[in-house]
Length: 351
Length: 279
Image (tube, rainbow over all chains, first blue to last red; front, side):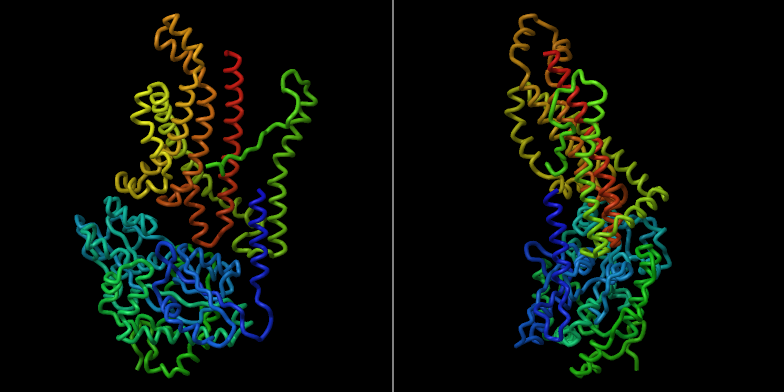
């Protein structure tokens, strides 16, 4: 009881103390959250992890008293929504499905950049005849529901002329998915690159890779700021986005590819697996931070998915949620318009 | 383990309960109810206050009124009743399996020194591993279906039941055993007339501990590899950032757990009283 009261008081104190002061001067700390993996000190596997490891955002604040705090949440999307709601974060990078859920439930987030794409894999038991998405009909498939992987599976099914009624979905966390397919409890699993080692061990066969069907099959997400932070510190917000865009440009340079894989491997996935997962894709295209027509089309599909699956109870106004000004300014000031030309809704570059 | 055991002694210290007239008894009952309800009411007040004053985010700790509305919605739609039915059926099955086998195993290591020497250390080592650690191996063996959940719940019930039974078997008064030896009572008579009554208090606390362990494990099991039941309802509520659903689940599990514990404590007291009257 006393413990409960003290933790309530602590939560209350945190909520009060984290409200930034209404002042024009630079913030003392900027807190950035990302999805994390790994044992001990978790780390990220996306654009924000690169910005952290290479100090791109920190460089923007060089000479100022502002400190950066990066937190990687192994509790993934739901944990980031809670941290944002508790006022423990100013910026966050996470998948579209949970951040749409957060927005629909009243979080005051604003999308300031795209975090790019994530490759989604499908792995099947070697003794079951599954060579394509169409073969999933009547099969049992494990995924973690209410994630971008869930969106990926449903859109892949639609693309193959199937619906979720044609398969049985089992909601399992990553580690349990591996155990379930090894135990032959499910016929297939959908997930990120953590599925790749299964093939080497002979436990499963990779039959689907989202990037093979073009960028529209890849997972997606965004880099968001709280509206409160954006209003209190417009300049600092711009600086953070500048650093984020610089990280994306660095990542898009082919000569940095191996170093980036090394950085991501800090989250626990071996470099070989990361290399294999990214084989054949241009990191410049994959981690394009722009909020263009392609991004909007992706997010519209995400919102429609969330509504269809009843993950959210009300619609989200995407136009009001996205603020392009920061990323556009960063791209213009760094003269990167030609590096990342405008993409159409299907991901192809507009002429 | 101890988190679940709300150590509320549901009677105020005072006179013995025997031979009391109706009026003080009723007064005592009211006083007990006030003492028991005080903490939850204060908590509710604090909750309401922190929501009303905006001390915590409304998404993370929704107002009591919203949670009540969610509870009503979940009852009307039948969701919570369906989830509770599934969860309680799992507990019942796991308990029957786990407590029965725990009783038999406890009897074995409690009565036979060599069985204890051979099996006791292994049992104690395995018992110390939490259910969570077993999960990947159990999924490999049992898959992800209902059997997995029942086995984990049964394991949770097995351990305290076996320990209590073994303690009970070791603590049968030596005098009673001596008398039975002298009289040359038949084994079955001895078991039902001497062993079981002498162990009754230990068995009662074994049952109570087993059930409370089953409750703790239930949520873990349904959170990890479930797609239904109260535990899953709570995880799903958290995923959807609708923490009102999570709080409703917490209140339902807490209330049922408290009532069950209350009932079993009463039974335990009655049994202890009965046993001491016999002895």
